[in-house]
Image (cartoon, rainbow, N blue to C red; front, side, top):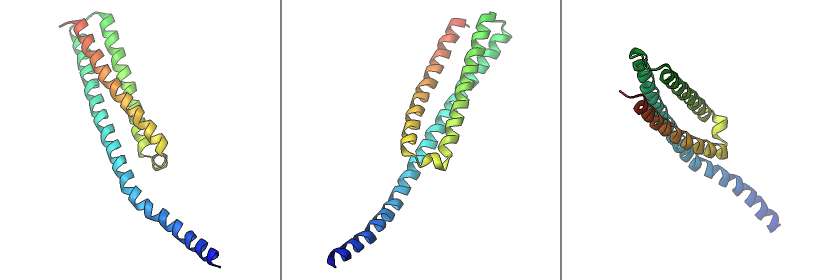
Length: 137
């Protein structure tokens, strides 16, 4: 009889422990999500700045009648930047999806992808700076 009582008590305690853990996890998950969204917003802003610089430089090359091949390269870089921006927008949409948010492994993988994308944005900025030097004043 004591065994049955002990098992019954244990069954009552286990769900209570599970419920007790969820509220503690909830604020942490919300903090993580807020940080993710902030990082994504920062990247979107940085990407927009890079794209604006590229577009302005491309306009400048057209006005100054730069060599056609330079103009084409500039347009290609701008198109690549637009592709990256679209990818960032899709990542941001996915991170807002509650079903996606519940999958912690996927969220960690998305964080890793976001970090790689941040590196790519910086490299794209560096490549554009190098391109401007090649084209000249």
